[in-house]
Length: 304
Image (tube, rainbow, N blue to C red; front, side, top):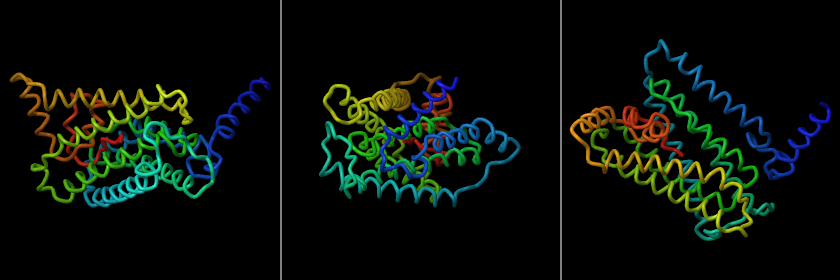
C-alpha cells in the first residue's frame, strides 16, 4: 500500500509539476489541478442540484441591467484579447501550420502566456451564464465543464499552435455578445434582428477552422507543439461542427412538410431573444428544445 501511494505521489508530481509550465506555477486556478477540478465540481453540483432546487418555487428574475453590464464586459475582454493576440502573435509572428510553444521568460513569451491565461479566465467567467439561465427559468447546459477541462490542459502549452482556437473564439464572442447586448438594451430590436442565421454560419466557420487547424498536428509529425492536444480538441470541435451543420440544415435549408413547418413556427415563436442558447440546446437538448431558449438572451454559443 505504501508503495502504491508513493507511486501515485510520484506520478502526480511528474504530471502536474515536472511537465507543467514552471512560469505558471503560481497562477490562480492553474498552479494546482485541484483548483480547477474543485471549481468544476461546484459548477456541476449547482447545475444538477442547487440551481434547480433554488428556482423550484421562484419566479424568473429580471436581470436586464446586470446582463447589459455583463455583455459589455465580455465584449471588451474578448475584443482586447482578439486584437492583442493578432498583433503580438498570429498576424505577424506565428506560423499557421505549426507553431511551437516558447517556454522562455522573454517579454514576448510571457505576454503570450498572459493572453492564454486571460482566455482561460474568460471561459470561467462564461460559467456565469448558467446562473443567468437558472434565474430566468431557462434550461441550463453542461457544455462549459468540457471547455474548462480542455483549458485545464493549457499549463502544458501556454502559447503556440493551439492558441489560434482562442483567437477565433474571441472574435466570435465579440459578435455574439454584441447581439445579446443589443437585444437586452433595446428589446424593440428583438423581432427585427435578422442576423441569427448568420451568427450560426459564423459558428460553423469557427468550428471548421478549428478542426482544420488542430488536424494539422495529426499530419505534421515533426511539429514541436504537443501533438497529444489534438486528441482533446479535435474530437470536441468536430463534434460541435457536425451538430451545428445538422442544426443549420434542418432549420434554414431543408424543405419542411406542413407538419414540420408548424413545429418550426412553434420553435420560432419562442425564439425572440438571442443566439447563445441555440448552441447549448443543439448540444444538449437537440432540436427538440433548440429555439425555445434561443433568444431569451444570454446563453453562449461559446464554445464558445
